[in-house]
Image 1 (tube, rainbow, N blue to C red):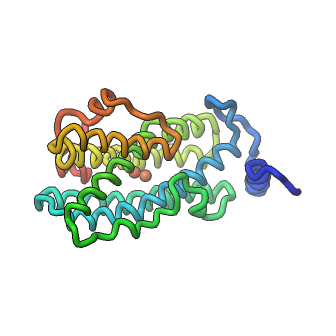
Image 2: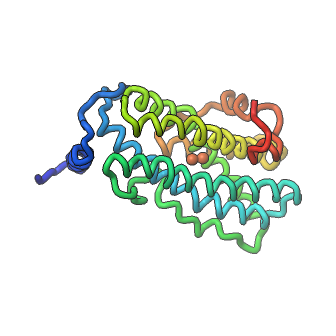
Image 3: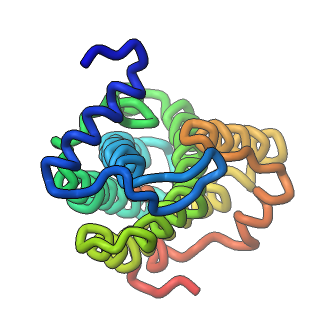
Length: 256
Ligand SMILES: [Fe+2]
Ligand SMILES: [Fe+2]
């Protein structure tokens, strides 16, 4: 079937793959601002989320290494190395293991990076250079962008996916709900904590101009995945009054 409209063509493919798996693609399982969402809509979202999560693996892996070359106090550098390294593994897990596998079980092949909302995740620009000050700047900028993405994922994207899964009485949906509850949400909460840790250790001590730049980077990240921008008051409230501890960042202490 020829289509002029790529989105309609993609939906035709989605309908075919879901039907091949014995899944009714047209069952309506929820509503969003733009209208009702059917199983095929969930399928499309899972492909996008899997690719976007996977794209988080490369930049966080690179940030961990950049943190060691940014002239930071060794305790801060070590904490960021461990936290970003752990995040890198977790994003790969969300992309491949959680959302990628659900997408596959619904008939999708491994999602490709062109389905990602944030590009392929190539991180060559994060390779540490000789200038530690410059490295620190890039670290702060990307930490803001990533934090923005994480806040939208945690507060908007996952709640929508959870409500769609709850509306779809199917083993794939039930399994995905458990994985989001037990694995993805606690890990994403810690990723937001890294954003707060960077704010309190690297950004806030530098004064208002640098704080404003961090807010702008955060909003850049939020816009990348369709989130609303934060005003400075909300941003300040989300940062809280103190940095999270290293143990909280690594998931060794419960975050309350
Ligand atoms: Fe993730
Ligand atoms: Fe994350």
